[in-house]
View (cartoon, rainbow, N blue to C red):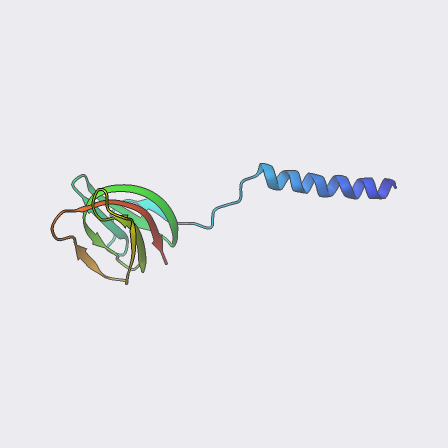
Length: 113
């Protein structure tokens, strides 16, 4: 019986640790300085935002008028204009895109492959 209680305590402690400690994110996508042409670069009236490494990140980037994928295959979830339905688009490596007409209202998620 004592052995059973010891094993049960170990299992419960492991389970409690799993609940207390958050799962580490598989996403390694992070924001970096725009110092290399290989980075994903998103430009709006406020300047440029650059991202490196593969992963997924929720963002709120408004008024996007240019995108450079650099050395990254990128999927963007975005709202093209205020009030429009959200959509998604995947863009291949080394692609440059200039938004014609009004800028993209809001990018909501970035996935770098």
